[in-house]
Amino acid sequence: MVVLATKCYVEGDARERSLTSLASLVDNELHQLSVDSEIGVRHDDFVTVTLSGDDAPVARNLLREQWGEITDHFELGETYTGTLKSWDDDGFVLDAGRDMRIPASEFGLGQGTPSQIRDRFGLVQHLPMQFVYGDPCSLAAAEADRLYEWRRGPGRVTVNSATRGEVRATVNRAGHAQDIITVERLGLLEQSIICGDRTDPPGLLAAIGEYLPAELRCVIGEQ
Image (cartoon, rainbow, N blue to C red; front, side, top):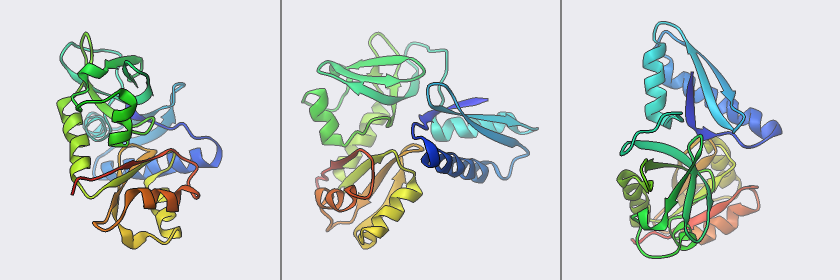
């Protein structure tokens, strides 16, 4: 079994749709392998994939690479993935199977309070993020690079509590399909809508917000 570094925290029909979506993604990733998979959810909402068959070790590695993995073992200086759990004046807390506090001094994301940095980079709750385990923990350089790249682009709207398909359908329903480039999957229920060059992220957020019971945040690009 592999515990993916992404959560399923919605309930009812939304939960069923989310897990069905994930099962399709896993099947597409592993369809050339001799392996069977079964999707589950842990008590802490992290998604599990139980694998059996001759190619199960290869399948586990593929899923770890794509989604990140939640583990019980941490080594100093190694990079892991957690999901954004909370924030306060001192820093962020990532859930990596246990709480990992990252002080603001270890963000590597420039000046500002944790709340200001969350606003600047459009960080929604439960977003999977890479960190380096240590005393203290720090955001991984690759994570900082990813977030800075978001700011260099045309702008984004980040969303949680919805699958990629649901976000795309919402954009279409709101009549803005022509105003976006694509919807990038960040986690099972965390997505990033990449805006077109002439699309204003706050305007797009306002247009789709009434259709999505989710947290939405803007990333204002520097182009």
